Image 1: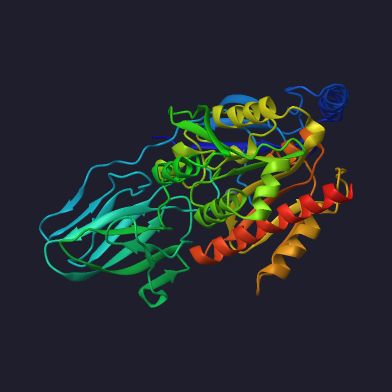
Image 2: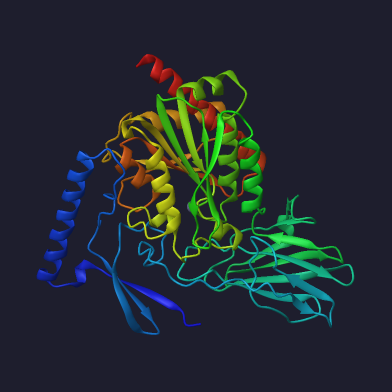
Length: 460
Ligand SMILES: [Zn+2]
């Protein structure tokens, strides 16, 4: 399969007249969008403003296939072309067993969330696994997950190599695919020069599950959603389907009309610690506590816990089944997942001025809150910083980095702020924290938010 490459052609490389025309068009587009947005309180598509003059030439085998506008600025760590979100091909994972019958070792990838490429052996106990992303170029979040078993009890050395990335995740292992523990760091050796890693694994006739992070598939999230939906003040509905036809599910918690909170998660499949924090956050909103009961009486929260179900069950590094980063599609809305979430949220919001806060859960190297910088005007501009301070006071030892940004990047936060004029945050949990820690922080984050909203509305 030929590798598709993308090249960004910057405005600075153009002639003066070539520069001026797209610049004028961009200004006109922004002005038009501002006028329409100012006049509108109903669902619109006005957020699809072109933020820069870049065009991206998609090439296949050196031949320019198409020139498409890019919508918004990529994040600093993005590969070229990440804000061009028209669908592109992905390569599915083979579910065939990789058999080494002569030495009595087998590898399997026939489960949701699995990712494993070619495997070969260089000795009786040295195996090389090649892990490839769903497509390229792509950010370095090299997910893998597979099963391994052997005829006799023994230790093998697995050399994890990556086509299109460098080793990042110290794996979790499991004997049932449900209960997991981290591999001891003494059993993992990172090879910085090659971007690979060696992992020592004790294998036997019993299946050993090995995964970049604990598996959290859409089935597990569905069970969690179904159990919450048993509560009288929680509603569950399907707001659309993913590229591959999986349901996109929404929880609505509470019946209050004083304000709304919009929450999403799992745009990026490997980000499991962010998903844990989201689950605890939502459980705190649905808890049988006086605080949560008061909140639900006066406010409502809408939650789409898994925006990218195809990526989660397909074991993707980052993209959806349309081969794009969903969290760069919130201006262009080329993908069914972002369109469904946008339309569901807009359809349920009766008054945009009543939307109070937006949260988008992720994971990265350390705990970071991506907030809004001083160029962005929102109602209640101090809310997020005060909320983060409250979380830090409530959770011993928790200090999050705060990184403010503007609305140039086509991410959920930018769309939310442009649409509702309310504060929003990209909530990143450290990717190596324990489940318990993510739960503690997620619970405290919800409790502090509820307290602040109840107190503010009382004062107001
Ligand atoms: Zn992410």
